[in-house]
Image 1 (cartoon, protein in one colour):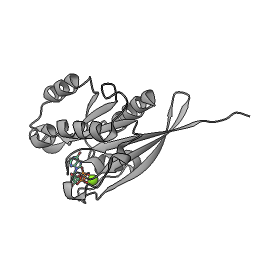
Image 2 (cartoon, helix red, strand yellow; image 1 turned 45 degrees about the vertical axis):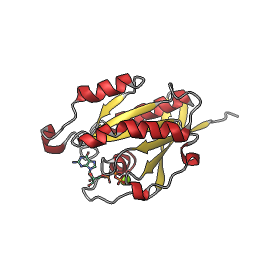
Image 3 (cartoon, helix red, strand yellow; image 1 turned 90 degrees about the vertical axis):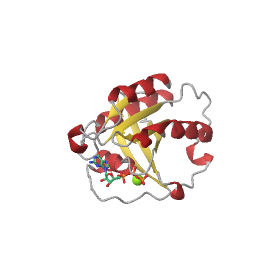
Image 4 (spheres, protein in one colour; image 1 turned 90 degrees about the horizontal axis):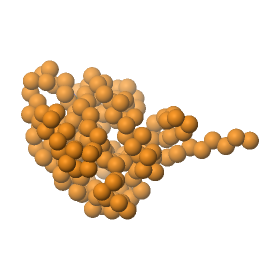
Length: 180
Ligand code: GTP
Ligand code: MG
């Protein structure tokens, strides 16, 4: 009898409050978007099944709170992660500057066996806003940061317009699978 092996991949999504972490996940998993902001409290996950080559993969995506007062995640939460997605808003400089902090915080908490090769991915979200005229972080600036932090893959996304969302999460799944 053929046995089907299902692989569970744990992905943690981090980034400042309001950058669109929850919206990206809702767009990816439920194909839904709302302009209404509802802060995430604590952390929760959604799952999505994917076929990658021969493998059936269950992507377990953990949404977290960007607001500090809602963060209550200990090291145990981060441990066992197969990939970490860092999200910023291309229209908010501070959210980009804070990538450094989120990156460090993840490595500190998760303490992966090899921090240098642990898979991250960066998403620059909300590229749709004002047709791109209000963006303050250029694609090059973001790509340079990713290149100098261990060649992290970089995607520009819009949860609102469903731009690059599938592509980004597919890369997340493949990267996580490679690290599993
Ligand atoms: P926390 O849960 O507080 O950490 O925030 P979050 O990162 O989960 O942000 P959330 O997904 O709740 O989105 C914040 C606001 O930005 C909401 O009003 C969304 O509708 C809006 N938003 C999210 N993604 C996009 C996008 O791609 N384009 C535009 N125009 N708005 C977006
Ligand atoms: Mg949220």
